[in-house]
Image (cartoon, rainbow, N blue to C red; front, side, top):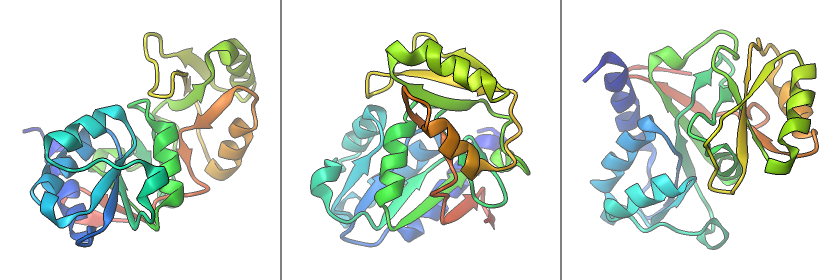
Length: 215
């Protein structure tokens, strides 16, 4: 196993300590979350079920014997565990490399506690090295791309990728995001944008980094 995978697995194992018996767990998407789902499978009789941010994670949860619940019927979600593509010192995140950013943002918004799990390489001083994903309604792709270009970045259509919501992804390259909250609000106001992969207005409550670091 690589150093990065070791870090992902270590962070995921640490997150299991925050799962309270008999509760519903919000579960994100991605390679780090796969390790968390594997660990959650060992405790499948100890949780009431899971709310999932993607069809991919839903399938993996079911493989591990965990009931997947619809968010509308789940009630309270005390804990949401997910990874990130980048994390700054204020626990603001870039997410969406797996194209699940909209559902991830919804679950993060309703969860009482959002615990983010990352390997040390995802920790940065300023967000923007990783391209910023923006989910867009297909007919608005060109319009949104022009608006994003005006913000100083270079939008690239992630061709061949369709989100679980039936939408497309634009990845915005070349940014240095000093004010994530302001940029999140500005991009979300563009007509045709479903959501942007900045988790700044609702950042993580706790970030577990590898085996022993945290924010």
